[in-house]
Length: 150
Image (tube, rainbow, N blue to C red; front, side, top):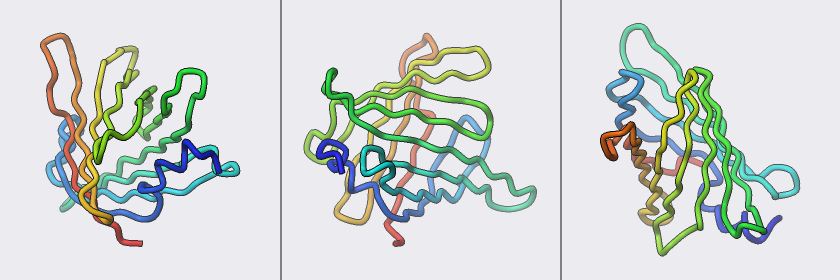
């Protein structure tokens, strides 16, 4: 396993939580995340499913691969979802219990600057915040709290 990518081991395993996913119109989706190391530990793969509660169930799925760019000394991530969006993400890594990442989201021909903040809350819980800058400053677009389930 890559020693740098091993610093992301906290995200391995199964997680579940709730939160706001503002750009989908889904009010309080259930979020499930499965994280596992792949390709001899050089990549951490995360698979996400947001499941809408109530009638007309909708599922949004995404896959994220985390790796490490030794030349740039940064974590790198590519993210793809079931609505055709993708993002390129970079981060210098953890500062205490916080990992902040800068992202460029490509959505239907539009480029959106974004930033994600991951906060460890003990060994079995984390929070995720995502903000986007659409030209009028940073706006919260996602907020979730996840707990380890496996």
